Image 1: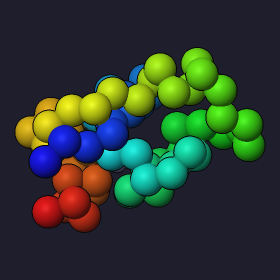
Image 2 (image 1 turned 90 degrees about the vertical axis):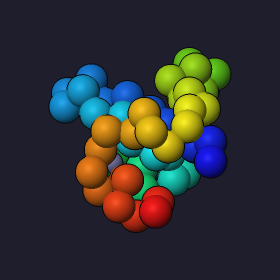
Image 3 (image 1 turned 135 degrees about the horizontal axis):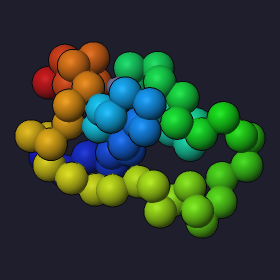
Length: 61
Ligand SMILES: [Zn+2]
């Protein structure tokens, strides 16, 4: 499976993107209501094995 992921700079964890503001675990990677091209660049499509957030990982499997 390939997931849209985002890297959290604070915790250095790779999360699975749920929508334009949050990740599957509830982490907010985009605090703004607008979603720009710059935000889109943060999202990387990666296989499940690179996901390091334990919460995102447990929900996805
Ligand atoms: Zn997460």
